[in-house]
Image: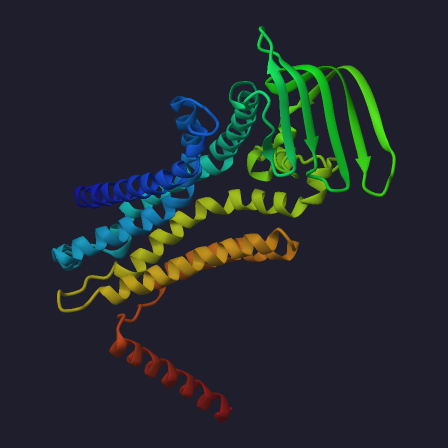
Length: 389
């Protein structure tokens, strides 16, 4: 890499890191405030609070990194042009490919970062959050829920115990699960205590019964037990008993168990999640190339760059929104796979053509008019030639 390329690369890296860290910190702070009840109502420590909220940072970086790179390239090129350095580089014979090289290096690094998060780190972090939330619920039962109080753990799920024994066990346990209106379950037990088995948290009930009432049945089914282990994962909201697509590793998404009810029911979501992980590393390239296509040409100080930046922001934002929309459609229809991959690849191809294959018109009312007039003239000439044949 030439010295001038290293100079450009340093400016771009500093701009990228500033944008990435700043945006991530702001968004993480707003998300962390939403989880502040871990410290207040759920009685967790600051360490647990920071752990749970900190595990969301990889997913934030994955989403923000393409926009941070886009902003960094715009900032770098605008700075170079504002200081007339782009004009000097162009006059010295520096080609577009040479100017693009440091940005390509940075885009490659960001793409690798986004890909590693998308394929490995993000699913691991979401699964860790899921397991920690289950642990928090177990702690919530034994540490926070007050004896003699009826506590709503979830909408339709009520927990109560009479008193706490000397060994920490719960006496006089009562639970009622009305989350499924077609099947109401009531648990009664003399004692209960939480236990961890192979990383899973359970509420172990002793000497009790389970009463299950079907809506269309007048009789209830009663099961008497000496010991019954209740998986605390089912304290999650309805439909969250199984791991969600984003909580599963990429290998698991490739080898789905179609016999699993949750997988069979939401196969579209699993399909969309898998292909999202492959296209996520492409968006840093799109952001970099669009920013370069907008500001990569040297301009004099009299030529405004504001409109070019505005159009670039609109184009990149529209492409990213289109990608999100294509992923949503893919969750419902398999044909949208064409859109999921077509949008980023066509965007990359269009930006490369704009940089090397054709001259972009200057952004402004006059250049737009000249470009439209030229296009109309070429179309008129083709029609005339076709009529002459």
